[in-house]
Length: 164
Image 1 (tube, helix red, strand yellow):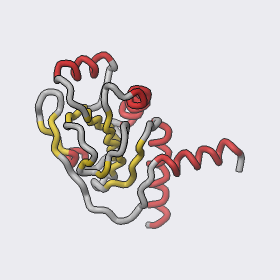
Image 2 (cartoon, rainbow, N blue to C red):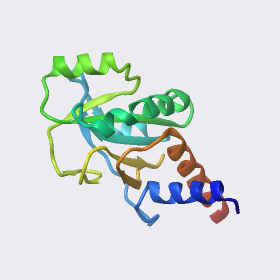
Image 3 (tube, one colour):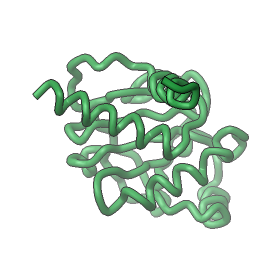
Image 4 (cartoon, helix red, strand yellow):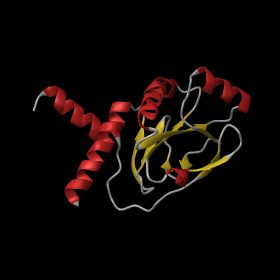
């Protein structure tokens, strides 16, 4: 195995750090930027990257282009990104930020907290990967890339196929 392939495997394995045990479907309800309540369960049937972030967080800002790219590539097929702004910020300021960064995925709002219905949020950004069945499959504290997400989903699909 060459060094590049080995490093790629290490990145994928370190990307998400939850075991692949049987899990129960999860759900949450949060307001979007228009005040409409959105449910995680609305996205059943697709992979969902739930990304907790804040406008003041440099690593969050660094990963935004990757999340935009991933969402754009997958939104009409098999996966979506949901951003959860985890901060006290005026709605007008958040809307301005979202427009200036050209965010193309749904943005929901939540007051700062160390825990969510998906699990512990020990730092920002924190991303959870939700399976099409609504189960938390994985978690990553720290930035992600579109390739990391795609590789991990492909690995999950392959391991499911080899088990069936």
